[in-house]
Length: 547
Image 1 (tube, rainbow, N blue to C red):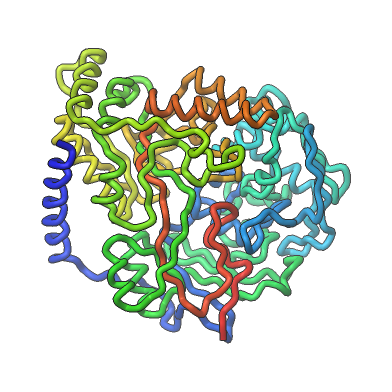
Image 2: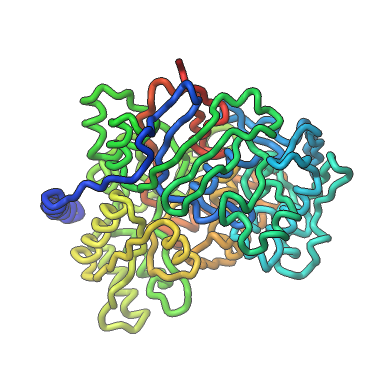
């Protein structure tokens, strides 16, 4: 039955695509007439952004676009090197113990206005991120630090946070729970330093424009025309400026359409472009080298558990689980090599004790079954006291792939369950805001790992995590997370993760759909671009242009 529904959808989708193509206008994006992909004489790289960052305030930023920009503008205690391994950043050396960590900062580290980067800048930034009034959705990531959760909940003053400046160039962190992965946390964007005087000066406008923040990374933000253009320029104050080979990263194009980006690449206007299903053949025919990178990201459907939402009913969620087949979605609808069907909260890239976690703890798969889906739906209708299901809202992104997926889900809901699924397609910034407010029944969401530990996925749906957009709350789930957080025993931690994996399958707070891989083309003269799961991607700090 699922294959029959799929074949009907493909025919309808094909007709719809032909109709759209017949009346498609070519969008010409305004940009400098002399823009080119790479300019060796100027050491300049030109790129396109899918969207502009919603914010560059590291205390409240949550998305990959902000992470990409901030990784070039700012530097934390540790960084990821050209090979994607943790390396010295502002901290020239460090020591990790069971009860905390110490970092000794290099005195040559400078802000873009020439002032030194000190341990006080880190203390201020971490305290600020945890203040309840900051409303950072990443505040939870500090919770291994002593008193962090109590500070974030307003139960203790920020001065009680377990971080202090021993001197201008020595930082001491005290743990409230075991955190063997803290060095990886120290490289994440929410742990970046922040200048108190700059934040005090700009207040709520801090980081809203290029002139409203200072930088300590390899680049500065020279230009930011909202919705249109960003430009990064090499930071002359950066402590390792002599080793930075790229002088300028120009981003005069902002479009989420892979076809538009590919056309810009084909015409020599940008240096890197993603490939989607319809572009792969053309790229091969033109003789472009096809690059691949597994992003480590998980895509999923997330359900809303707020009061009054039909999606809070478990039987309804089980019906959706038996309706959607990730394998068919990946191979027949998306159809792009390198993307893998997802059946677990934990992607295949997540490490276990010795081998990948999914090899050590195989996931229990639930096969699609239309008859079973309809039985669960009838049970949900009875439990909810409904005669008929009202239309539901699916919040989705504005890219062509996002619309393609959303239309597939819409078709399955109608033909398989008899439910109208209305697509609410939003640009990135508005979609993130609607997710934060809970303005959806189901949202097509994604999560990329923030640090190199399984907890980066596991605690995403803990009740206290602000990135838990559907507000899922399960005491058993929370209990297993707390057990893993407070244990230094590796097997105990991973056994708890196995229980989390089981709960996600059985209780369906989300429905994993696929693990993302990126196919892309890159200008052959551009070398040394790091593609990495962690630390901002793509990363141009170590890049150069071949003469």
